[in-house]
Length: 350
Image (tube, rainbow, N blue to C red; front, side, top):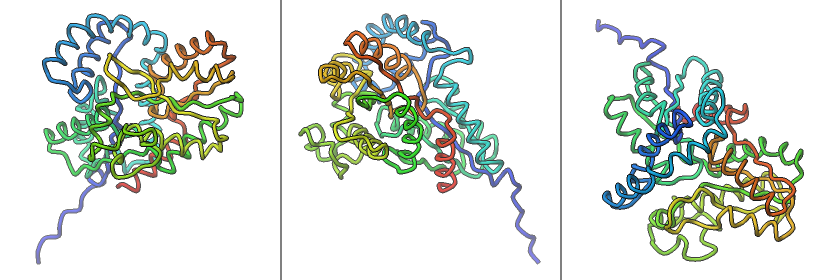
């Protein structure tokens, strides 16, 4: 009689969950910020230009100038526990592990900085999980963020000879993501009473948007190119952003004309997708808007771009324009509804 097949132990049946975010410096000081920017902006998917041109721009223009100013900005939002992005990411990972229970192992990995994707992948492989589910925490797809993170993850997991891996897709209009964002936002709007709601997303160079269009003739070719998702713009970051705005504005039942979309955080002199947040603010003030609420749905965790760029700089600009008040609506961070949403995705994906 043949021997019975060995029964796998409980550890060998567990699923690894890898939460992926962009990254942050280790400290709000020029040296740490310089190290982070060198890794981040040295990525050819972020600065998508010929290697020599990228090296010259990074080492002769950006790194000699930007780290000191960026360190001052980080210092304004740094917490006693560390960088808000990392603090919120670790809180999310801990809450998700509690929600999922012992059949899952959760790790947080940053594309740039620490904890790195390598460290997170090693932790899951060492835990002897049977499979890995990766969740890039970027609602809208872009090669610069989602594509780069996926490529780096494949590289690290191949090096480790990992178990089977699946990657959950972008969730820019996924109903439960939209519902979670609306649930977190609704009481903020009720307490603040805004005249207008601005959806401000991270910007992207126009050339990267055009590169996502397989037809080469749809994206940015007409003012209506992002009005609906279709085959040509199915992987277009800008179209995904407008789709998020439509879905969340609908869930919040915002009045027609009561919300708009803009893009922040542009870098360098090449054309970036419009309209720009810092140019939309004067337009809204000129229209008589006085109380402005701002959501940043390209970020699921509060970070430099939400807390400093919008919560401090945009608020100061708004005040200078005569606005009465600007409120930054917090990101999803580790809110219970967001934890439950991710847990549902994980269970379905497993």
